[in-house]
Image (cartoon, rainbow, N blue to C red; front, side, top):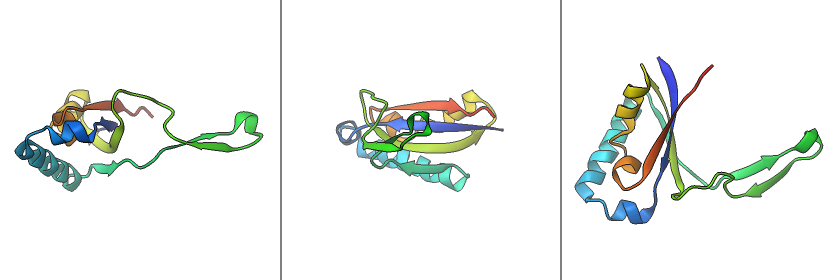
Length: 108
């Protein structure tokens, strides 16, 4: 098994224009993923941390990465391969509600 991190991007507008039945199925799918061991969170406000040359920590509220849609949440999941990981996230709320989900394999 390989560990994958999925990053969901989406906004309220895309979510609201998605048929409620589709959203309900997507939330049920998330619940199934959780029951099967996926760890899943919605995102809070990010903070950038810097410590150049180890000489002083500073932080700034806000995301460093930018995208067309805000980060909505994160999932850590186990799958046999990338194809299975893609299939596991394809029916999540961000994927079906006019957002996007990035799937990152973790190497280690």
